[in-house]
Amino acid sequence: MKGIVAEVALAAALAGAVAAALWRRRAAATAATRQWSCGCGQAYRVSGIDRHRIYWPAGETDPVLHGGCVSCGAPLPAEHERVAA
Image (cartoon, rainbow, N blue to C red; front, side, top):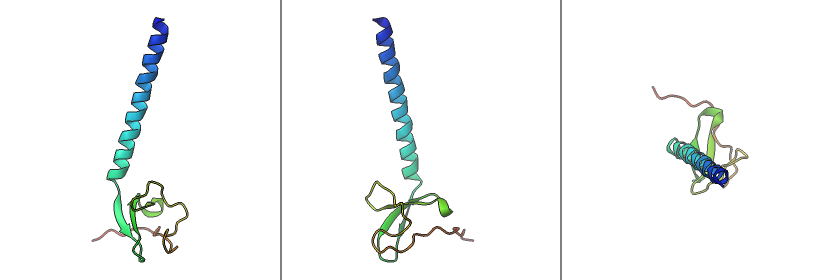
């Protein structure tokens, strides 16, 4: 009986650790985002840089996978970002 209780406790501890790690990862990803808007007015949340950018339509949880604006179809920026001097 003690072995079962120990296994359940270990499984619960591992599940808690995984949940905490996922929460920290999501919180860090959300903090590193910025806002961008297409010429048509569609707003996006953006993370990453250059060709590694990920775009989420404002208020959505799923990213854009096809590389074009969800409203007008215009290509989303993927070129090298210039640093302001």
